[in-house]
Length: 236
Image 1 (cartoon, rainbow, N blue to C red):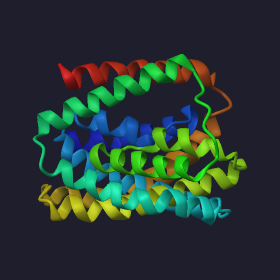
Image 2 (image 1 turned 45 degrees about the horizontal axis):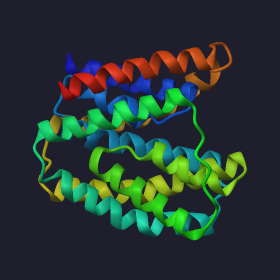
Image 3 (image 1 turned 180 degrees about the vertical axis):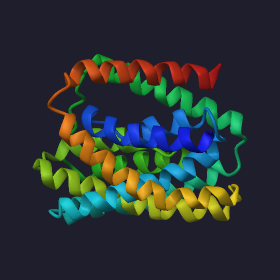
Image 4 (image 1 turned 90 degrees about the vertical axis):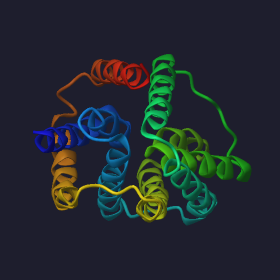
């Protein structure tokens, strides 16, 4: 039953991520942790996240390589450290960290306050470090990365492709560290990976088709409330 739940949530997360405008990893990881160990969920979602971003690169090929290098290089080392750290933490500690992240993310999203950052090198470096470390530690750093990346005023397609490319190098860094660090799961989960490729692809397609039919702001609020409740459950 847990397998069907995971695939169902993965599909919903792909659709929601397309409609609501924030990462599928932020949605899929906490819901998956309701039926499987959160460390296992982070590893599986890392593959799912990687597949979505590779698909994005094929669709939006205009990468700003200069910005990518400024974000990507520091994010590699930070992602390695974050992934290394999670292999040393117990499951309950990881749950609390993820729960605190979700609550902070939701509260910030509800305020709608825009933090103005200057498009300078140290901002890119800081964005790469913080988003890479967070992605390695709890599997999701997209919200932090977008905060810093927005400062550079990239055109939408360039922004999407550049962000996806940064996420790819982070995923390629942290996934081997997870396995090398001993986050081992039942072999049955290896069969999830091919299915996640198809789910990621079709989820995005469905999301794009219905995005204009649903009031985006109302939908975002419902999702944020759900994430807040999951965050509280992970902590308490």
